[in-house]
Image 1 (cartoon, rainbow, N blue to C red):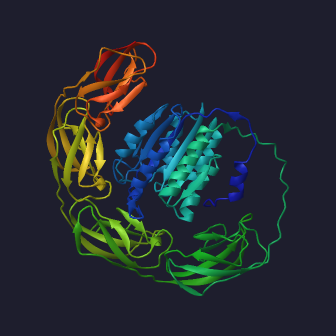
Image 2: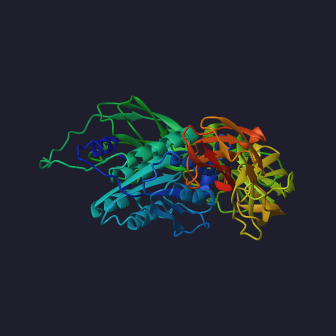
Image 3: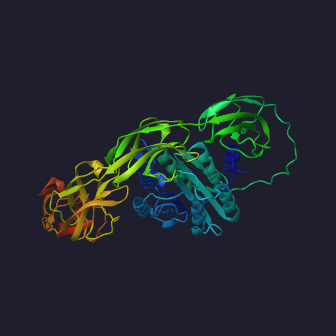
Length: 581
């Protein structure tokens, strides 16, 4: 029988009292499946998730040992596409952010196998192990997350899985929620960018807080009691459109965890299809399956799994339409108007012409209304926009769209020097997430160093690498990491000098002259003569104030250095001795 999430049991599981112990290592599992191209408020979910990850990791303690695993990021349709990108370690947040930024979103959702591999990587049978799963979809590789959670909990020393369900329907959420609840973890649902950031912050707080050891009191032997069958009736329509939602009226005494479901008339008593918890209401909304013919609405007692009431219903054909423009620029965003059943999870997607029904590219849930904004692939050619029923993956309607090729231009606006500022003008598609970056000459297509998003405007400022040499400036389409155009750039050495009086009075004001690139964040500082490169300055003034600068001498006599520091690279480019008397 399929698993039904018991909220009461979940609440009990996390409420045991215990002794605080130190938190151990954790693995973040990042969903890089193709479904992450779905959009919320016009933004791809993967972009929202990566930004939330950046924001949350910024507040993580350096001592917290975190790792990163991803699935679906290398190829389509491969349930074995799972990889540890960053091994759990202290001070790993920068490596995690860099790895997440390079992910492509292509494949399936083997979340159960990923959790199992993460547990093994954390040596869960020997040490305490924590997994944080961030997913926007249910298991698609024929595994049972509920059974896996129970197995890992029973075999592990102290294994816990926390799950953030991003843009999941109720049934999708309950499938992954059981993975968390069966291990004593937490499931948090997030439907937009703000909720996702809050959910991920909560997970980090749980991880960094003292962890509680479960101490469960011995339970008395249960007594076998045969409950009396409650007197229950239900009343729904005799006919309805497949994949639509109906109202079902209820009467009689019942438990709040009992549920109403719809199944084939010959289904076994313990079977269920789409369902809704009763929660002691007089009327519930039941989602119907995408199937035609005679079905049966059933009221089921959650404890005994007995059918207490039932009624036949005839399901009839449903329909939908999609309307959009005939052609558009590859990688752009278009409006798609639609009509249809708007069942939970239904979506509008774009795929190659003739692709199988269950294939999808970027998509948007119909729950947001019509029209929707849909991100197109960044490769030109013939595609089709589809209305898809989420439950059965059946295509109800489609419309062709021709994607036209796009071009870009780049032009340097200054003569950059190493560690300085590169000013570059660009034209191009300006698709969501597109960026301009600087890389060594001949670097791999998906390589990047410092970069700026094209959304920032037609003139971008990028910090140049610290080493002189031959580089490329590239316009990169974020969706596929495809380089639309690149131009060569030579980074030259820069002459830097600093001049100050040989000696000054303690606490006095004196002039400092300097030459150098004068980058936006460069500064002149005063430090003790034996201070390391990264020492906190006693006094500092930005070079943007011009030359000469007026600076205050330290109040204690001694030997000091006046230094020119390139702020972005932390390089001391020039210095001079200063004696304070």
